[in-house]
Length: 160
Image (cartoon, rainbow, N blue to C red):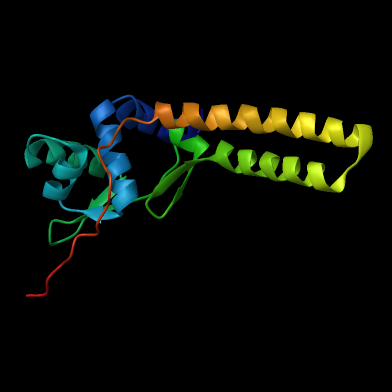
């Protein structure tokens, strides 16, 4: 196993298998940057000290960095189950969602652009693909731990 493989295994073992650490990483992926107090609130922890514990663990693994003001910044990495997701700003989207959109488009195109037996086969296979990928997308969303993040607001830093 090469260096990259060992690094991925370490990330999976130390983060993906640790429920709360993974939740904190998901919060950081969604916010981009946050203080320990913000992370504790967003993840639903009882105290900022618990958030600091998980943030320091992520910092040791180089998944977050801490600036001089005590704000943590996420370092985006794909490991474990996150390999099946695309992180766009604060949204974590399963890759299967895009296949569902593709098959949905093929269904509509088959209905309007084809005729006869070819149309029926096109609709049948595209609906089959659409159904499979919609189910996979729902399953991928169930895999993710609930991070408690409903609406994410960027922390405001005051100069002073």
